[in-house]
Amino acid sequence: MLLLIVTGMTTTSTYDSQVQLGPVTYSVRATAQQDLYVEVLGADADGVVVAEGMLRLPVTGGTAVGKLLGQVLDGLAKLGAPPATPRSLPPNANQPWTPALDEELRTAWLAESQHLTTSDEIKRIAQRMGRSPSSIRSRLARVGCDPDVVGRPLSAEASEVLGVRAVQG
Image (tube, rainbow, N blue to C red; front, side):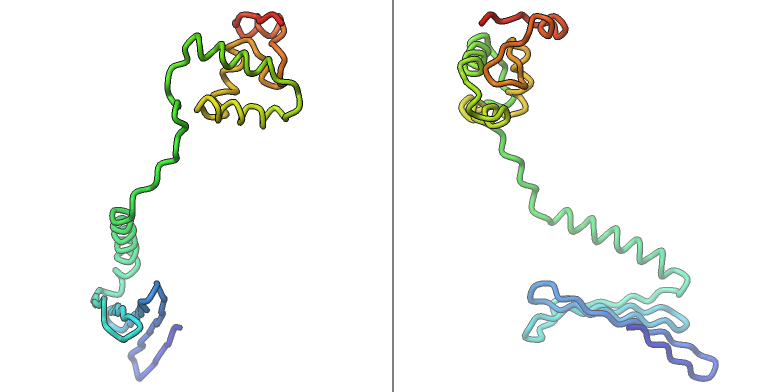
C-alpha cells in the first residue's frame, strides 16, 4: 500500500507491506519525506520480535541501496542454504570400460529380441551394469551394436563410418 500525505509544502510517501515466512511475519514500512526511512520488523505468532532494523538514507540513494541490499541478502541466503544434494550417480559411473564389459554389453544387446522398446532395454541394461542410460547408448555403437534397434548389430557401412569393428551375427 502506498500512502501519499500532503501537508502544506511537505509531501510524505509511505509504503507498507507484509510477508509471512513460516511462523514469522515480516513488515516493511518505507517513508520518504526529506530522507527515506525503511523500517523492518519480524515477529512470530506470539508477537515475539525476531528481526528489526531501520535505515535512514537520502531519498536519491534509495534505489541504489535497495539493489545493493537485495544482492547482499541474496548472497547471504545462498551461503546459509543447505548444500545442493548431488545427483546420485550409478555405481559404475565414470569407471573405465574394459574389454570384458564391452563384451557383456554387446552380448546383452544382441541377445535381446524386440519385446522391449529401445529406451526400456537401454535402461534395463544400464541398471544391470551400474551405468547411466546415456553411457550405455553411446557405448553401443563402439561395441558394434545399432543403438536404435534392439538386438541388431551395426551394419558394415555404419561401422565403417563410425570407425568401429563390425560384429557378426
